[in-house]
Amino acid sequence: MHAKVLKYAVAPDGPPPPWTGEHPAWGDPLQTESAPAWPDIEAAIRRLDGRHYRHLLLFPSADEREQDPNPGEHEFLSVIGGNGVYLLSVSFKDGREHLLHFPHLPAKDVIVLPDASGAGYVDEAFTEAACRVCRDVEVVVRAVRHYAEHGRLDPSLTWETLD
Figure 1: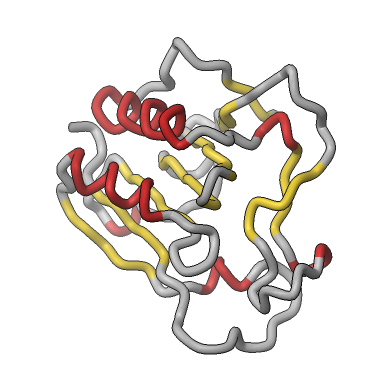
Figure 2: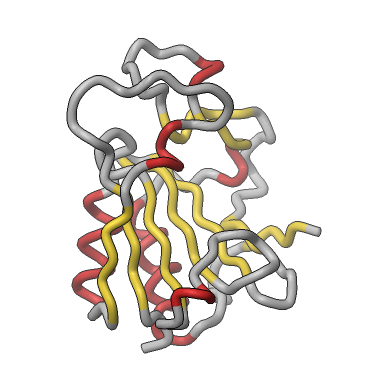
């Protein structure tokens, strides 16, 4: 198995704290599973709901120094969202970053993570272009499994490469 560490975020219970700037999901406490088996990874994907379980990361290294989710600096896979709205990206150490891509969809933004208050404020939501958002959890599961087992992008899917 290429994936050595699974980290998934769990939003705190209760009302969201006040925040400014980025979505509060990036501050959610991370749970860590070392040497995850495929059933653990798949369960974490299927558990994503965009509210309480909002994102997960897979790392190919058990070394904590290699587990920094900054594109182009370390290798990792990220899935953000849930409930039929997923953003999947893979970043490699050499600077390549790839997003699952659906070129038939527009570049118009859609909400991936709703605002934490649940009130539907667009300016407090995390959005992404529709052409980068997967609506099918089975496609996400397939893409993640290929990466987790082989350390590569699933060639049967379309990927956008970011510069």
